[in-house]
Amino acid sequence: MDLQPLLNDIAGVSGNRVLPFAEYSKSGEISTARIPVTRVNANDKKDTVIRRFIRDYVKRQDDALAVDARFEDVGPGMAYRRDGKEYPVVGALIVTWWPRAPETEFEAIKRLQEERHKDVRGA
Image 1 (tube, rainbow, N blue to C red):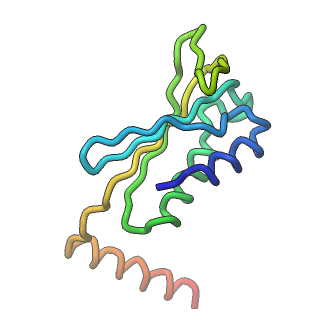
Image 2 (cartoon, rainbow, N blue to C red; image 1 turned 120 degrees about the vertical axis):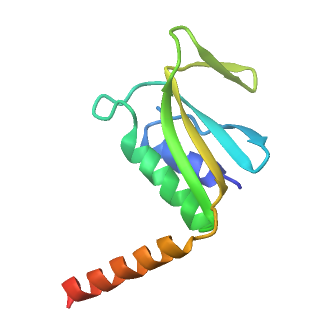
């Protein structure tokens, strides 16, 4: 999955606090991207809003994927190196995605009940 358009958007919105780069790894069906963060957001120390945006982006790209996004602190003095440049970092956004398991019969029934409940409340 190509996350570069997402990374460019996040870097712009965050004032390059989140760098537009990622290191990718894959283990079996599980894919991971580590996105470096240079400064902590004073109002959202774990970047909850950006993590939610990332999860929504990945799900829009492929609805058959399950996704998790978390913030990971790194030790003081850590740096991210790219193209001969060094960027001091305070953390990383870790995005992990994998194929979603098929919906069980119980989950299908529960989803249908919730949809019907929404229809009744909305009417």
